[in-house]
Length: 613
Image (tube, rainbow, N blue to C red; front, side, top):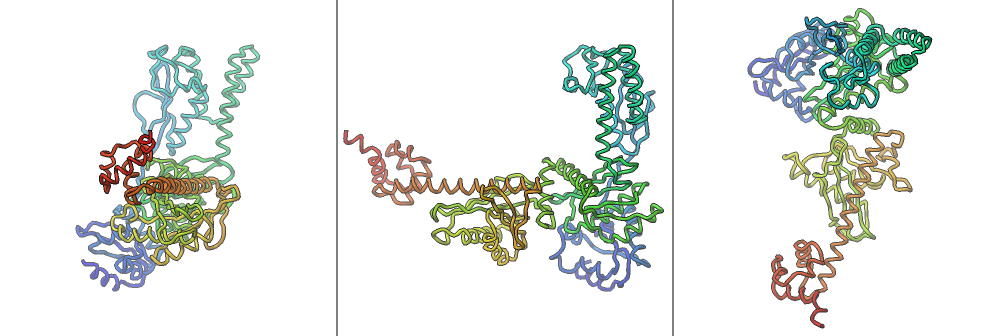
């Protein structure tokens, strides 16, 4: 079907709840959605695409036909949508890969036993602890046990590798007892393995009690070396236990879900609490993500996540609104058999845990893109501070530089993913007027920038890419000067000014609604300060360069036959006045626009003293 035919078909749909099923030309299902009123929802896809996100545009381009199923209620449509997505796994729905399985802790059966984390149980004669539902918990438990009891985490084979090579860093920072150095007997080593297994089976409190009794007996028998070793291990277990208490807190049984987006990708992070402690953590990377409708994306994620999980907590804490929240709470309550509710904390301990979850999602997403999590966290913090609808991946910043109105120039710097993106830096020389007027200068620069956008927008490169955020070095006056430019070009780009204090340090951000203090937001403050320092450095550097060229050019124009154009050509060719002054006539004639009389005039000007002698 053509787009017109699809539109006509959608206008004939009833205004009742149901599920719609989009298909491509081969008949394959590419998207499944639910609607409170089928006609209203489906017809939106085949009308104007002006408000569609890129992912929706791509989906609509591939739609050849659609089916629909009428339902008695919107809740019934939600349940049917979820089961159909699970069955057909359509290309344009959010799809989660469920790689969750049981995990184990393996203890090898050789003389020098080793403890390791394993995803599968093998019939190899080894001892297996578990199964554990949380691979994250099992892996961390193994790492903690090795550190506490000084067990090696390397791949060396004992006793074969004892005495071969130097000990690793773990030995020097006292996280390994140094089996490879021959400092530990087989009896001592296996005693440590037994203690580690006991710790993994019974937990920290029981292990501390057992080791305390052993330490006291060792002290009574004057075995102070053993007593000191046990004392250190008790301290290590207590340190780990305290760390777990900090993570656990008193939040009760709940799941915490947060999402971070970057360009066309996203990461949902889930942190799970039960029995007063954090027991699991999962991350889901999603490609080709539509960040323009996060409430709908949260709904799709939550539906699929809990279809894959048996245990649903009484509280699900979210970092933002979710579409059809009441219907979704009803569905989760039905699956659990008890009441389930969503929470959106704005402050306090639960909000702090939510922020921890967001940072975890930012770190995972940043790693997948090859950069650092704190950079994405800073952008996320800035977005929330400024009330932006999405994380500003591409930021442009502008500053004006002049000296008493002379050599009036501007610099534009770009930060991409929280880092300077120098290949997109640009320099502007103010051409519209002479004198000092920072507001008019800023207006001219942004006008020229968006005129270039109109020329290059089809390429999407250079000036053809629009920023997610514009930051001006200055206050409300600069913002007011530039706002009409955005309105003139019909652009809806967030615009703010960066305000400095008396010590020339970043103090606040200003927009139409007054100043926004940023000093309390550490990551956003650091990012904005870096942007303001960088754009100031770049603009003032260009201004100094322009002044220097003017000084050089003015000295050359004192020579007969050398005007502005020839002076610029000479400086462009030789780079410095010193190189011009020592050049021979033939070399000077190589410059574009120079002839012999002009070259001789320059040569004679710089060699006048030689003639007089």
